[in-house]
Image (cartoon, rainbow, N blue to C red):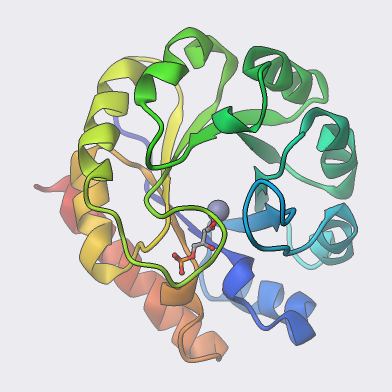
Length: 226
Ligand code: DX5
Ligand code: ZN
């Protein structure tokens, strides 16, 4: 039985000068989860925010904080993000040599564990950690920035990973360049959880966010019927 579609707006595309209000707005506009893109300027060529910012906006919503760590090394920061209010903590398979240990550590902190891979990384790296994760995140852009173009070659990877998941209760999330056009394609390929930054925050008002989320959700549901 496929899981319900989840729309997780990425606050990387929000107005950082009003971040708390922006979280309130996307919550009210129908976001299912809040996707928090953490970047360290080392694993990716951009710096975004750390656990203190996540802690600062935690009280603005009860929605799930889906924290995507684009940092390396990662293990020494897991507890800080867990304490800041992350519900799901997703680490890059490319961030270090001990992925299994990182995933065990996340669950040991009482949080759901996610693993993500960059466009050039094969889904084969997931083979031996399928029973350590609650979520697999497929990057459809090279991580580091919002507003990039969707990398279509990743659709085959999504299909492969959907097959690898089998009957396991693992969410398949897609992140990067997802909009009304690409949402149907990624869901048809097997995704059930969609990250969207620029496609949600376009327009800058709660009303615009509501329309954008609704349009992406509608396109994703249509992808279920393909
Ligand atoms: C990129 C981030 C994505 C990005 C999505 O490194 O992981 O979450 O913010 O932004 P859009 O949807 O604009 O590609
Ligand atoms: Zn992300």
